[in-house]
Length: 72
Image (cartoon, rainbow, N blue to C red; front, side, top):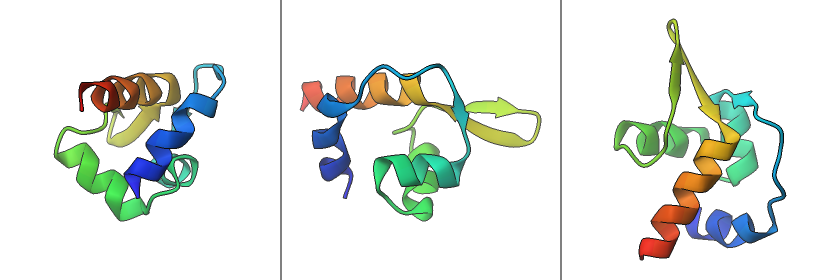
């Protein structure tokens, strides 16, 4: 699942900095909500804690996934 999203990263244009919730990030990456949670908990996705809320910076996630993909 995540490999498919990684292949699509090259087509991603620079987007304005935005904070996404888990559902929104799952939709952008075309993975399940549960996969987002699992990858966050394992350290595979950078996140920001805003009080009790978990948010994801889209540019940070893209940069992190590109870096992880290039190391493999």
